[in-house]
Image (cartoon, rainbow, N blue to C red; front, side):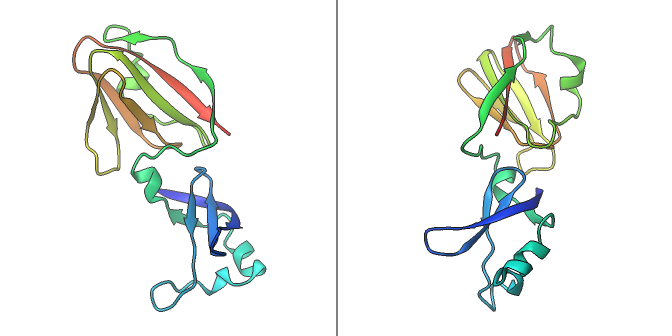
Length: 152
């Protein structure tokens, strides 16, 4: 998934890491011939790449970033009370991650535009939803679940 560069920091080996708007980091090395990124070498070069896009493989893998705090959650939904908006393609806002918590039954989670076509979620499974990632859900059986939202 394409994410904007919002900053940089050096890792413990003194390699540059791009800070992405999804709260993941990605190394941006200049080590030709495999990595040709001469802009990494100078501060002005790095600044010229702020707001440019990098593919975040950690978002594609539905990897939840560290350092986020829960700030709200939905009521519990059953197969009969799932809001229609959750059944069709929708997304969270920029900077907002979500986790689907299934309390009983099975919920089908469809993260659109990923390699995973359908992820069945049962009790104690967590459905990770990255910011701005289109997804939908469907009840496979009697189900009780809620969604919890996170941000920095």
